[in-house]
Image (cartoon, rainbow, N blue to C red; front, side, top):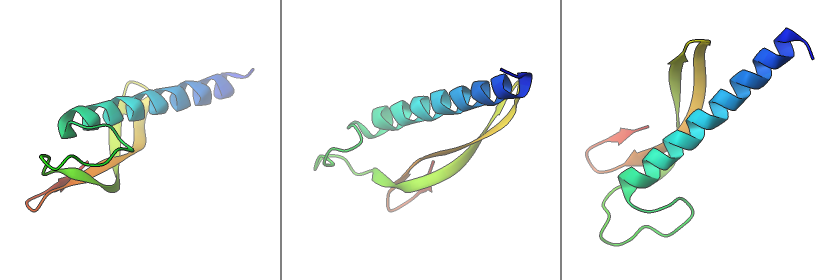
Length: 76
């Protein structure tokens, strides 16, 4: 395995880890897991996906994460 292949695998792993962490953060923020119906008591909901750039020691990693939407805001 070459150094470039190891670096690419490392970046792919970091991206997957970041996306998993952002997904967990979204579940916590909304109060219900992805793939389930939104409880009636919750005002925020999942609203597609947005892009986010996370700066790491190895350079920026572009990630796609779930977005939320309310009447007042939409963020990733």
